[in-house]
Length: 131
Figure 1: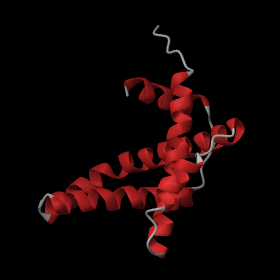
Figure 2: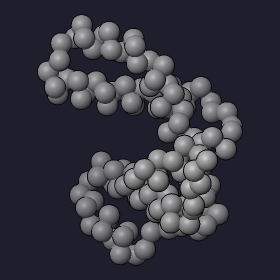
Figure 3: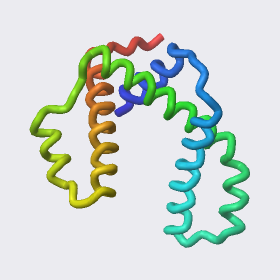
């Protein structure tokens, strides 16, 4: 896991490109909603959450940028390396489809699995040098 984190950080560091503000805002909102749910589930009070949200705004934006960059980088690598899911993997995903909402979730699962396979390929074929 530590190797993957180092690889992710290095991928983001060496691949410099701008991300549209709208993408960053959208991803920031998703992260903020996830944090909100976790806080609400832990029964913390609203005042604590308001203070936390002000403090974390920049951290959330930075995480959103990192997430988007990683997503774009892994997408490009997956396309170049022709990384796909096997028929068995696709069938396992499709077997869980019960309705339209599940179909959308399965598309996300398929996308995440391809990204994970891409990251695994990079991890397997990389060497980390410590200086």
